[in-house]
Length: 225
Image 1 (spheres, rainbow, N blue to C red):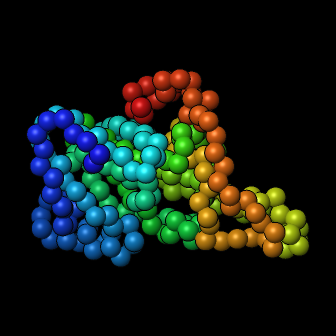
Image 2: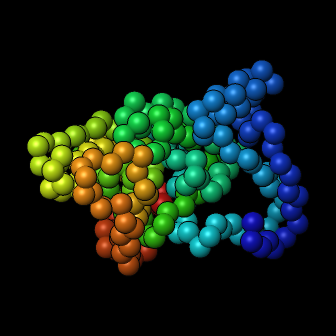
Image 3: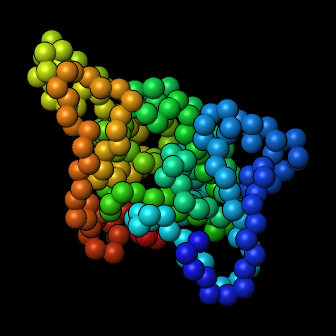
């Protein structure tokens, strides 16, 4: 929280935000801790406006829906800024996560009531893609639908330092699936080739605007803003 206008109470959540039995909340908490996707959560209650930020990151708000592609959103915990209490918060496995430093689990926010919204952070303006597409595992931030497959391109050139720098990619193949990518590559947990220098940040002025035009229109309407 960087500022507010109104009357609010701030408190730490010990087990998370999900409704339900105490046992269910404990099990969900343990699953998030075991997977490394656990977050220290602050609960905000009150009326007015609260302004949230983190190190000047670009913030994108995604509105979840009761059905369709935006029924749930998978997002890395480090890229998750805030969500409403009408989101179900948990974790889901990613079988190909070992190929990047993101790990084999990721956070999953699902629609659980009206006005379910998720605020995610990106290093720079996000690039919004619709599957089928391939993306760099070190740049992907969030997606709807199923977990990606992996595409590996390794040959003899890779091992003599002549790699293209794109030896593995995440493939999203469900038509209509939405993928959010940031114009920045994290340092990967896997380096292929002896002269692979691609792990330097790539910034661009406005990937979101270049993709869908100013104002975030196009296929998303009011879902992302």
